[in-house]
Length: 509
Image 1 (cartoon, rainbow, N blue to C red):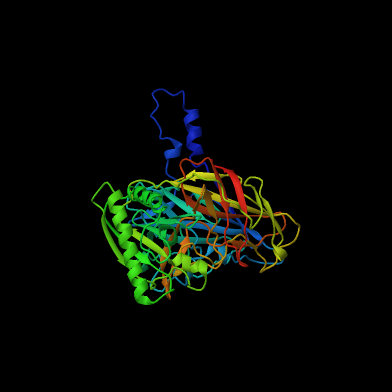
Image 2: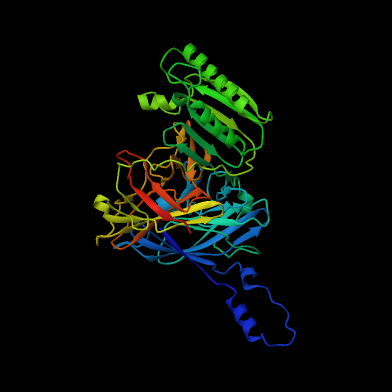
């Protein structure tokens, strides 16, 4: 949705250096690139297309005030949908800091590239944002509105901060000291109740379902398919177990040593007592095998079983029961190095939608919303991540109609399984690497009802509308794949709510 242009502040200083270059014994001047921007200076301007219009976002530098950072953005509608006087970019500009309470402009978030944490807008006890435009939804007109949001400052004073916006990720965003630009509203830092800083998590899954790895800088969770490790109803490890457990040992080696909780799970076939006993026996078998493979005795392996009491999917089909037959491992220690994603194996077949090279793209008919050419010209390696922007250009000459949207979402399905809440149409494509799938970086914002709510570090919404000729941009952020030179991206929803496509050979800048 967004395109950015970074301003060249300090140009006047650079010109002065040229004009005085012949003066005797000149005093060295600072590099213009190192000259801090003034707090009221616009350091970046981004154009965001959505809801049939175009918004310009003029960004000022982050201003550090004690333990907080203040972001100021002047937002203007430069193109309105036909017949409209304003744009309401709720779906792609507003987002929650706490579950169920949207924040106007909450999609603006910070990522600390040093720690791997995401910083969310500060809110008061009612969940209202601190700053200006203290509402749940943003309305943008032809007259600029000044949006100000407050975040917790990183622990490291010199941490490199990236800024997430709809359709764009801006790395090394300037941070300065001083007073933030003026607004009509009091900044009210004393009203801050929460300014969450949350570790980003990544999920990798073998496409055959054998192994799923979810990790952040602080925790590691591994789920092993019971059907791959064991014969039905058995606690004796099968022939494929050695290879799978070998990969587990490699993953554990990327973390500081600690206690590894190994928990067996079953489906609901059979009685409770038998399932409980089987889950305990399977956890013990995995613990014994890992103990013999680990070179260090610093990992304490702690097996237990939960029978059928903690499913990740409803026990209403053979496929879901297979997901529930598993052994999970959890380790809460610091990550020492990046886990490599295995790139071996042929790219699996894809029969659910069109396939094309990423720069070329695929044509998707979105019904009343129009026809779109969906492409990824390139990906960008930045801040230990892969920034992937999917561009959807409407190729017919139709006008945008309220309520008609292009859908690039895999639908209301979470790779985290039952108990994980998401947006109804999240923008959650995956990267396919050999026989593995890598999902976008995400983070928890808290519980709502019985579900833990998860939000994506990139684009929060996978749907939007456009008029003929307009290009929507959707951002997804993934962990870096250091050895990769090209990427394959696809959606894997497979339901009436999803749009499926595969884009191959995406170059990495």
